[in-house]
Every structure is written in C-alpha cells, then in structure tokens.
Amino acid sequence: MSRIVSGDIKDKLHELDSILSKKYVLEHPKKERDWRTYEQEFAQRIKMAMEDLDPLINEAVSMIRIVPRAGHPHSLTLEQRVKLLMIKQLVGESNRMFANMLAIFSMLSGIDVSYKTIERLYSDEEVIIAVHNLHVLILGKKDITNSSATGDGTGYSLTVKKNYESYAQKLKDLAKENPKTTGEKDGKKSKSHKKRLFAYSFAIMDLKSRMYIAFGSSMKSERSAYDRAMDLLSSIGIEMDSIRLDRYYSSPSYMDKLGETKVFVIPKKNSTLNGSLKWKKTMKDFIENTMPYLEQYHQRSNSESGFAADKKMLGWNVAQRRDDRIDNALFCTGVWHNLFNMGRF
Image 1 (spheres, rainbow, N blue to C red):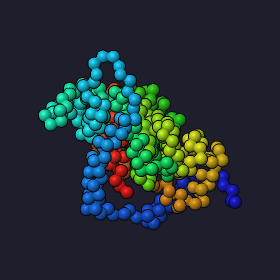
Image 2 (tube, one colour):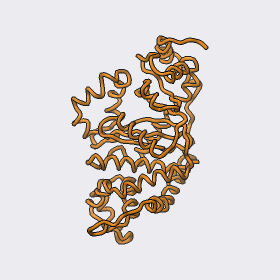
Image 3 (spheres, rainbow, N blue to C red):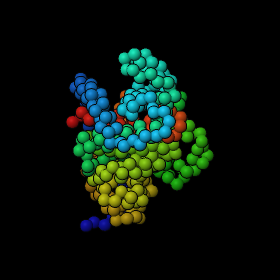
Image 4 (cartoon, one colour):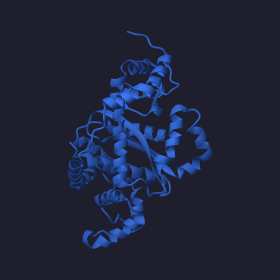
C-alpha cells in the first residue's frame, strides 16, 4: 500500500486543473437529449403527478388524528386545505392573485376563500404535518430505503429584482476556499440585508429515482439548510450508502458526521491529510483512483439539473414573507419535485 502525503493533494488538484479535467470531458462527452422523447415523457409524468395527487393527499391526511378544538371549525376540510396549498405552490402566483383566481372557479369547485386564508395555509400546523406525510408516502411508493445520493444547495429570491445564481456564486466561491473568512464575517455585516434577498435551500437527491429524499431551508445560510435536510433524512430513516457534495463540505468534520456513508468531494486547495481515517482514505482514493472517483463525483450534476427543473416549473422566487411560511413553501416545492418524478422509471 503506497504512502501519500498532504502535498499529493495539492499536486493532484493542480493536475486536475491543467490536464485531468480536460481528459475527463473528452472521455465523458455530454449526451444529446432527444427532445421529442423528453417532452413526451415529461407530459406523461405531469399527468401521472396530477392523477396521484388526490389519493396521496387523502392517505396523508388519514394518518393524522385531529383532536377537536374550541371555536368555529375551519370552513375547509384538511384535504381541501392541503390541496389548495399544493396547487398554490404549483401556480406560483401571489396569495392575493391566487385567491382572485379561485373566485373565478368557485362556481365549479365550491371553494370560496380570501387571500388571507391562502396565506395562513403556509403556517397551518395540520396542513404542514399532512405535507410532511405526503413526502414520506411518495418515497414509500418508490420503496426507497437506501440511497446513493447527491446533495447541493441553491437559493430562492424573495424579490423579483435579484437572481440567486448570479448573486451568490461569487460568495460561494470564496467560501469554498476560505471558509473562515467568509460566511460568519459577511453575515455580521449584512445579515439583515441578505435575509430579505434570498432563502437558502438544500436538497439530497436519490440518484436512481431522481427524487429528493430530504430537503431543508434556511434564511441564514446554505449550511443551515444542509443541517435541516440532514435532520429530516434522519427522521424518516433512509440510509445513504454514498453522497456527492460540493467542495464547501470538503472537510474531515463534515465527512465524519456522515458516519459509514461514502463521501465524494473535491478537496479544497489548502486541504491536508490531518483528520480521521475516513478522511485519509477518501483523499487516498481521490489521489490514486482519480478518474473513477471523478465519475462518481460528477453525478452531482443531477442536483443542478433538478434545481433547474424545479425553478422552470415552479419559479425561482418565493412570494411569502414570514420565515416559517417561506420554509413551508420550499418544502412544498420539494414535494412537487418528487410528484413529477414518480413516473420517471
């Protein structure tokens, strides 16, 4: 067994920048998409999602035991409230505009609600529990118990004037290389300003099904959203055999928290071999088996494709203003992603 030293990491990264990345691209050309087949498949997946929505909501609601409370009962059943929230998130209009749209169809649907009713759905505890059940049910339908996964973060704008990708890339690149000099420092300087610009989201995708097995959001940082996604994953009991993560998470501390899960990351330029045995083994794999390692790592592109599809279908901004309602809006986005992918395979 050959011995490696910290300098080998730096040498391999230099080789990766100058030679190996070009070699990888040549050996792994981008596959051309058959757009006719893709559009047909996509239309079928949307049709299946809409057909599955009603029975899944009914099942998700049936799992909840509701204790009667004092006061007037809600004018809508829990099934109706969950359905309204999910459709509202799909349509992507403001609360007021969506309420006006509902008024047009009230003659057919029998549902006549105000924009305040729509707004309160995002903080309705019974509705949120039902949507959580919906997420668990969808994963159960696909029989996902173990996963080879990929994880990545993105942001959703809270204003129509800012796009997250163009704004955050510069900060994210700095954080990858200098985690101690960005994030907290910048957060103290402009915390309140950034808070109202973007909401951060992190999703963990199962590579086989292309479904999000867990997701989390935060008004603070992508790291906080990552932690919440991991908390959700732990609560639903799905084990990860492997995960591919952004360079930001390339450190012994993140790797050790993932236990037995095999982690594929590209090390930072200042990385060393200091750390756990798991970290050392991962760096050895990166140095000595670089091309197979990169084949695994670059499956992260599925996360980027997933976010792009989500934003194309559901929008790149969030119309809510309260933090809890923003979190729940993004949770609904994750559930819709999974609904659209139920019919993929």
